[in-house]
Amino acid sequence: MRELKRIAHVDDDDSIRAIVKIALERIGKFELLSCASGAEALDKVPGFAPDMILLDVMMPGMDGPATLLQLKQKMNLEGVAVVFMTAKVQTAEMEHYKKIGACNVIIKPFDAMQLSQQLRSYWTQFHDE
Image (cartoon, rainbow, N blue to C red):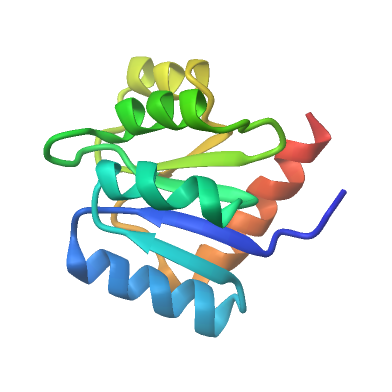
């Protein structure tokens, strides 16, 4: 299993992007691509070639699930772990996210100090499946 190094993060909330940037770059020592919208992600993520994509579910315009479906059309996501972030955690929604390709879901609010370790754990689980 290769090491988790490059993470693309997509979230329309400036403050969440700032917190995730600190959590993943400074604490986790990851290389991070931060995108403010699904459209920006479609433009930048394929060239970044991430190991993992961290996607907010609820965004204006193109939501996280729609962004994931569009990314699948633009690039090969085999071997790329996808994790959704959401405050909505109904069982049916969680099942839907996994059905469309998410390996896991992080519930908001999340613990920024634990985020890097949480993603590393999801990465290991993703490669053990």
